[in-house]
Length: 259
Image 1 (cartoon, rainbow, N blue to C red):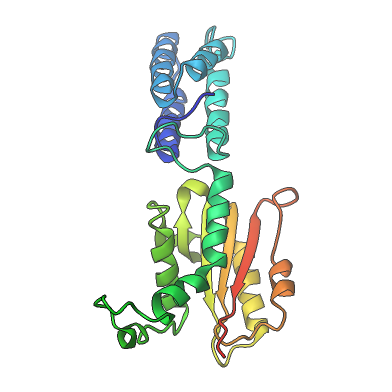
Image 2 (image 1 turned 120 degrees about the vertical axis):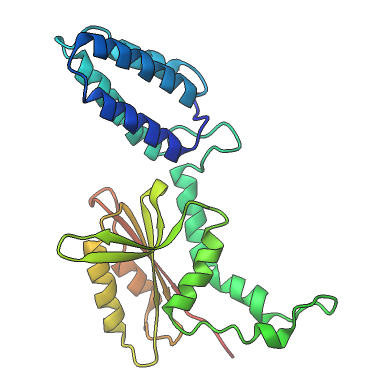
């Protein structure tokens, strides 16, 4: 099975560069040079020469018979397949495929409270230097605190993740709390307040779901003050499938329990 030998992000970047160069080609001599360079690039990106050979077959011919555009289309489709996770990395730098990426993200979000319990609420070992009274001073007071803690859990797994990224939305810009570009994924963090009503949360999520342009959108709600009456119904209300929509939207709600 053909695999990527570089990271998905690097492979997409390099192939896109060849697409951009290909669009500048107007002469047969330029076309011949571009084909040769692109074939070598593809051979270096993948574990075997299958992809490079397929590209060579698509571009067999001249500019006049349309081989130039067939080559560019082939590379565009190749980027699409890479982003879908069809080529798993064969080396230590190979990226996690899209399917497993979302499994990991869902697990981190759904088990966020377990990190809090283990790290800050359970008794500390007597032989350690961490003190229980010091850990108890760590309090998640608002969504900025929740975002910081969640980001610290996400980034060791996906080092390319970035926090507080602004995107142009046309007439106004939007801030993504956590953005993982390689997987076209944004994680938006919410934290309830004592004065907040469930309706306010639904309005915020509804607006963000409409305006955010990424393919995968996760809403992570740390409902500290338990303003959501029915968590299951709330999550179901903001779930869309790629089968019928351009975006896949998923909501995860954590309601802390104290007795």
